[in-house]
Image (cartoon, rainbow, N blue to C red; front, side):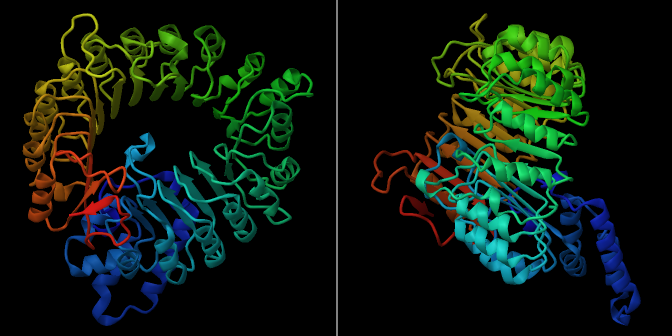
Length: 609
């Protein structure tokens, strides 16, 4: 189970080998095996042929555990490697077992790094991985990194080591600059996708490199170019020329230095786009009026199914997207501060929408419009315009209940609000029983049902009881141990649980750890759970990817006891500053299973037990 250290099955269609490549590779493997099978290896060779057609990581993991010969055969045929925690295994051990890897997905920092709860310099460097892979995997084609620290030198080594490299995706990474991007553009001549999503690109303004112009001349293989997180202007002439010579380009997401005038020119060069990130979606000083031209460009984009961007939305330009709305299956307005009145004419044209992200500035009235129109909606995310705890609520139980009544095929929801009722959550559990992901974030601490004053126990209890396939749950608001007893009793499929400002004793944590057999990831912050609750999960921690607890009531003694009783669990006590050692409770603790023991690159503010 090496490639799945710490976690889910890692299945991701975007990072699977293309069907034509997979079939060709299988044919080559089958041919080489059938031509000269060693007499004493017939059964193992037959097994390798069968394993070539196993694509699920979970199935391959299970096959590798049958016996030693299955273990060897699975390793020899593995081409796609998923590692959910970069410290769960060493690069050397992964490379020694899997010799034929062509695609790697590697994850680093805990998810709470997204909320600035993991101090800068914690770790998760990509350097040892790329240094180990460069001589071992010369045929590597794809890398996807999430929450990793990636240096420019890493990108240079990557670009120069893998002659067949095609796809690079960096999500929530840091440490690199436009110089690293220039190395990728210049040296990866077969590059098919470069996706930069929510990264911190760390250039000083006077050191920005013109990375777009480094792509080689002539026709490219580019199918996807995403750089909306890059906070610097790009050479538009070079970008325009790149798009013009990329006939396979299907996905283009530009940053907010691209005006609507420039967007029009890009769209005219690539009418085949299926995914478009619009950049600023406003005019720059001195530009004219492009509304008619932009509307014609959207009208000509017959293949467009996904729209995002709108980072500096000029509302006068919003009607230009009307011609594309009927075909849209995904619309991301999470950077656009729009009202219900602005949203209405757009959303009422989006009858086929399956994914919708939006700010809570649309209020309950906007969500009611979504519910009335988007009957096939599968995923909804409602983000807060003002994420502070004492902000005025813009959406509430009214909007949630409207969505549950109108979008009964919903599978995933993330909903930030300031007030909620049990009745609305119960209604969602009854109306949307296909839910896989339910994340309700009541931003004010310990908020009860705002109509009855009761804890939110019954609402979350109904979710886990009625949504049988629920795999991810985030709870908040005023919750007692009863809510956690419901989760332990009914949440048999829950793999990821996030808890904030909830619970009233260690019994609540014990209910979860003893009752959720599939639990893989548990994140807890600002909750009253202590050592007794922590130690109640000793029997289950080896089956989990990680446990994160911050601002709880666990002590150094409790953390040491976990480390003593579970020698293959790495227990990290994290302080915001090296000198911050005051207080009886540990500020942050991060625990994860590892095949290689504690890491050797921990900074001074991390204490390994």
